[in-house]
Structure formats: C-alpha cells, structure tokens
Image (cartoon, rainbow, N blue to C red; front, side, top):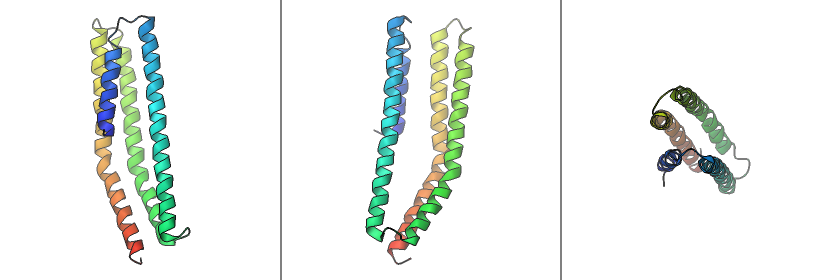
Length: 156
C-alpha cells in the first residue's frame, strides 16, 4: 500500500471516528487513534532509518568503507535533498496551520461536524499537494545519486 493510500485511509478512519456522538467513549477512541497514528509514524521512521543504515552498510561492502567516490555521491545527494525536503516540510506545516485555523472557525458553525470534515479533507489534499509538488526535485536528486553510484562502480 502506497504512503498516499495509507494516508487517505487514515484520514477516512479519522473522519469516521469523529462522526460519533461526542461522548467520553468517542474521546477515548480519538485518543486511542491519535496514539495509534503516532505509533505508526514512529514505526515508519524507524523502518526508514533501518533501511538507510542497511543500504549504507551494503555500499561499504560493495565499495569499501572509505571510498571517496561513494562518500562524494552521498554528500551530493544529501545537499540536493535539503531544499526539496525543507520546502515539503514548510508546506505541510502551512497545511497544519490552516487546518487548525479552519477547525477553530468551525466552532461557530451550526453544521460543526460537516465543517470539520471539510477542513480535514482540505488539509489532506493540501499535504498531498505538498508531496506532489516536491516529488520531481526529490526524484532528480535520487536519479543523480543513482547515476553517481553507477559512475563509482564503473571506475569513477
């Protein structure tokens, strides 16, 4: 399941859980959901870090621990990813800020739940757009990194 599909599924789940009666049981469910989402995010970050570490270990086994060509590729790739990653993070922070503001504005609406649902869907679409807008730059970095490693393997 792609990250986008997972994110959309989580959004649907959040929306479904927020449509309850609003009692203590619903707050418990929402708290539980928040904990589950947090745990899921931590798990994904841990898995991503583990995979990066395994990849770096594999590169060392392919090229040697102190291969200057590979280290140069890694440094270039790290620098290349700085701007797209920062832009994506800044964009997502703006989406979250807009969501908080919209949810605060919903408190005066008669159709509170509908307003909140609309705000959450809009925030989800905003975050997805952040990812889509920065994806080409991130892909160019990944492609340059791959080409650099191939050049190293070819004697570069």
